[in-house]
Length: 560
Image (cartoon, rainbow, N blue to C red; front, top):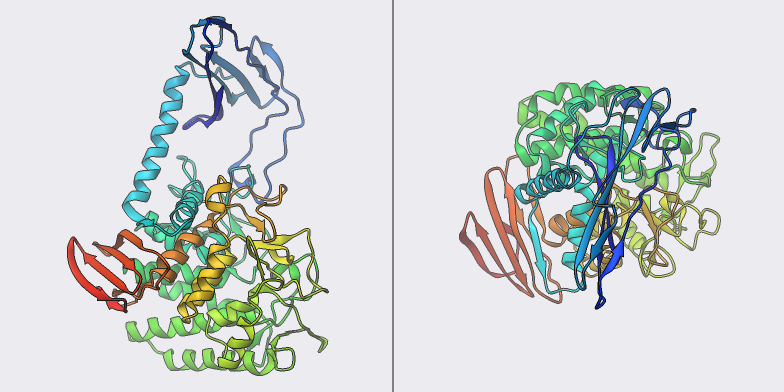
């Protein structure tokens, strides 16, 4: 017997397809009798889809007619086709379908062929796959696990694109949603971790999505709902950097969006004015505004997101120079002062690690993976870099199945119950992002060692989840089943391993790294051009728009 659960496109409901094969030598009699427990359905406004799924209604749906139930808000109808008594000959198969459809109270369910409804959903998924084909390169490799992990990373992003005529954007890139939670947009997930994949998938629509986030008041709210309204508390510490990162990605990958410069700058400057500052470093407050660890410590004046602020100032300087605007020199100076202050005030040379400064003058050392963002943002000198990398070993930040958000050596802050940011595993975007950062600084072997530990997800997980453990191939059952930041895996492969790099001037280059095995990237698209890349040991080939551009020793190649 095979069973398949199918969400219905264009209808509120789902369908179950059951296929039974008679593997015996004589006919059998089969009858499938679907039963439904309608529970407490309710109508939920779009703004109610937040991090947690909306609660059930207060009123239980009671029988209205055969296979129909209703309360004050919702009617639930059970439809079945092919489920009656039937004879199944030897080696033959039979298929039956049952669907639950929700309508408003007093409204009858639509009649139709359930097989056709299933086909409509399958057709919608095929359109989604064609969207991926048009924007996302294909990766092939003889290296075990690489291509499977890349494909699982891509699928994890595709299932986070939600489509409905009532949503504020088409499609709506949600943080997750397979289990009903996080069908909303958190900038850190969608724009911080996933921006490059979003641009490759949505193209010009990504700019429309950014504009809608700005209209929602995302600078004063933590996330945007399906109807475009801001939700939650104000001023999440990573939101401003995430918006700037998405904006920069749109500019470099599509060349559009210059008209938003003043608006983005004004939001950034308002954030700068709102937060208290000491020695060029911002105080981001308590845990709820930062990593939301289950233990305290990573609070107030911290390396990240202060290092991200320096990155933002540099990017504004780049844009100002390109636009002929004033302020570039001052912004570059501010960026360097932030990085210098991080090195002077937050680095502990005895511990060879960063510390967090509290308002009462207390300094606390937290061995958090977030410290590697200071490395990624260029805030570390050579000695600091070496000290950070020394802890990327088994028993500290590395486990057989990924990375730990808090080093196992940190007995004060490490705990088992929250892999997300408190240890024992990590948020699913962190490991691949770390691997990409290591490739960018030339630590190729370590980068590959970090990334390969995640390859079990390519075959053992249906989607990359919100977080997973690093000491065993498993994920917490009480957390989101999928996450859009799962696409950081494919980004690490394209922009770290394959070394693609875009610029504000519209150029494209590739500086691929070697593996113990061949890998190929087919169909990397950039501003109307298509690039194919093959890397085999120390040899590489680059094809541009079907014509060979380079073949020879592996090196950095300017493509466009």
